[in-house]
Image (cartoon, rainbow, N blue to C red; front, side, top):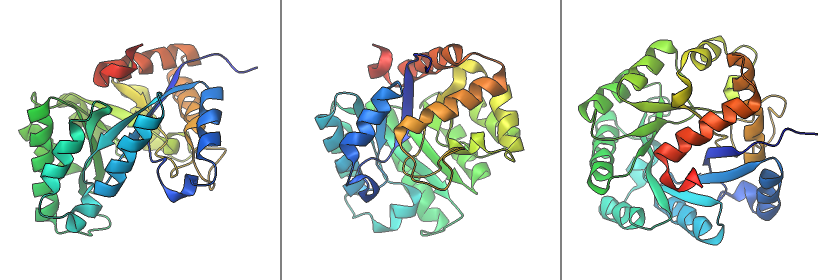
Length: 261
């Protein structure tokens, strides 16, 4: 029998085609696993609109809207106005995922940075947190966030850096969200971060349909699998699963006000 706990997946992409055949069943499995809240995250305008639609259709979902760095070059001239309009929907709890990506480099660095800064400014304007995507760009991500230190709160999505990067993120007041890779046996730097991050700064996510945790690695990920992430974090920290998930729920309630009840 599984331990009754209240889980949250703070980052998923259930609107994607990977879930077209069984989206309802995926949500049912999440509920059965104890996942009581889900955050559906956009990465461009179509996915942001889809996130809002899903949140309108399912009480346990809320939406995050924004332009991810790999889609900056596709955004129309009025993208910021469209994101602002979406962000004012009552189901939207944050701006994201936004940030920098120097791995794929689908847009020039200057264009990525300008879009990043504009969305940080939007988040400050409307009083909502941000969800950050940072890949192979940690130094510049932190530098830009420091420019907004104390004025915007947020989450480092699917954290993949070392302790120095984690400490810098904590310094600017950001939460650290762990996904499937924290369960991988060889992810030693990530394990170190998971042990050292203050409990009040930890979140859990899946990034579904990506980054499936052990023992589901290599298959499509889904929100029910956030339990594996929570279980591994609890083990790394020497906590019971209920103690870990209680803290994560409180952290999510603080950053996303809607999850508190």
